[in-house]
Image (cartoon, rainbow, N blue to C red; front, side):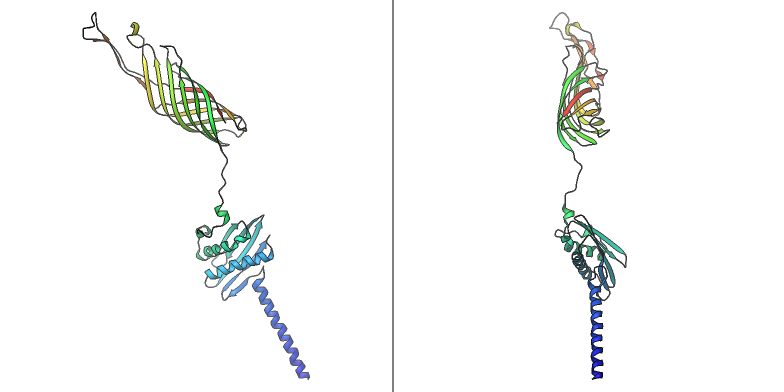
Length: 334
């Protein structure tokens, strides 16, 4: 009887010892802070978890390890870290040998199944995570529209006084266009008209232009100075004096027109920038790429009889003038 009791006691102790080994092995496989051994040479487990429930962390680590096991071969050790920041989850998978690490940001923990497969592909095959994108495995953060700085599109109207230094003519005009405005810059596209009301034969000037350009604001305040420039197409017409031979005049006569490309420069001050409508005072100089050229004008004499062949009495030579239109105006953008 004593021997039978001894055998029974040994059997109970042996079962307890075996159960302890099994429990210890089970803890090693599922412990949220340990490293789990799945098979010979492959080890993968959850290293740490912050801000994620234990159940979610263990499930997420299991899914990632499953994909890593399927993609890898040989003796490999992987460690997984999870960290929550608000609703965002950062998943980091680290490989010990050869050393490599990949971190991905996901919007919700429900995206773990998709992210797990891509993390395994990236780490095992040495690819950047972004190169694992496919049409059916995109994360929500990869399809979200990118943020952009705010700007606004405004209509533009204005009036201006146009001077012509060196020519002496003056004209009045107006502007219509659109303006894309941002805190530090603006992009105007304008159509400008100007004409004079000079009495013949006083100097006269008229212009038409279409231009696009840019403005740089020197501050972000409600009132800000600005400088700018751009490129346009300019039609410019200037005239002065009476036509030769008319009423016996001998004054210089100039009448020319040019159509071509013309850059421009401007500077000014814009007000009410914190409001929907804005007002700008500016000075603008258009820079024609060529001079105006008045044609040569011959004056004929018929003598005492109109039946005679006309004779060239005087030739007024061709003239060239570089006319620089300078606009001083106010525009409203709304």
